[in-house]
Image: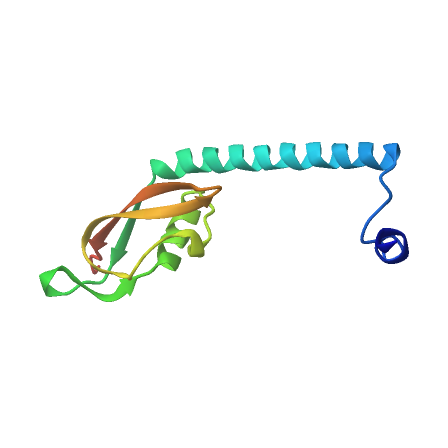
Length: 127
């Protein structure tokens, strides 16, 4: 009763005929293939990101302190310049980088895959 009177008329469900079941199986197979393809792309991107080193020149004062800070947006911009497109929200920085030196920064790729990039902050040389 509930299916015939409520779900099917509102197109929230379809009758379980052989034709509808075969369509459902094809859709399930397509979803599985699409997820596998996306996971493979994420793994390839993780391999590409894992070896990346980003060098950022920034104004600094005494004691290796930066004027301002380096945020995930700055790192994403430098990665884009290297040809690696990563959203700044996927770069995991607990707090912005405020000193010169080398820092390992984790990047969440997706599908529980993450990689680390090396971020090197060097002093900006005034010309």
